[in-house]
Amino acid sequence: MMNEIFPILKVDDLILRQIIIDDLPNIFSGLSNPAIIKYYGVSYNSLDETQEQMEWFAALEKDGTGVWWAIVNVENKMFLGAVGLNNLSQIHKKAEIGFWLLPAYWGKGVMKKAIELVCNYAFAELNLHRIEALVETENINSKKILIKSNFNYEGTMVDCEIKNGNFISLESYAKLH
Figure 1: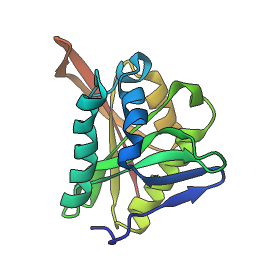
Figure 2 (figure 1 turned 90 degrees about the horizontal axis):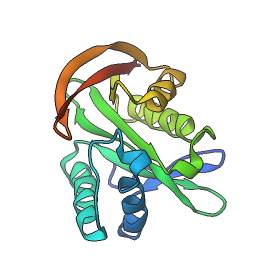
Figure 3 (figure 1 turned 180 degrees about the horizontal axis):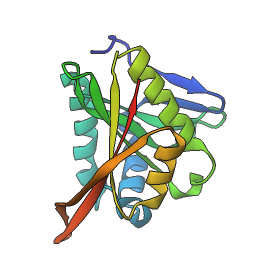
């Protein structure tokens, strides 16, 4: 699927680089933050638990089923969040995009740039035709960023998953090459 060397993506003031073990505290900081996990599929209560997420990132790369990047500021190398592709299918030429950003960086255009870099990479280097995103109906911020990133709303899957004991609905968005 990918080159032997992990793809580093750059634009303006951002670098998307491989997630490394030193990022564990940052991943925990994000995936334990109530503002982020409110609409995110996983959350962790400790650094030890967060190791499971690190193993998931590594397995995606190893199995060729996805790739996730740390979003880092060029100047100070500050970790801002993560973005990536999973459920990658070369047969169907598609993948699902996921993303999260530490709240201190919300509303600054960071995620729009990161999503654009990932989509360009997916279309040009992975030869994908379709990038999908599934978003909880209540997640207004993620829906806005997808629309700003030229994803098209395709429909709502009503009561399709259970989260915290309640049914939730997911909206489907996609960007085609």
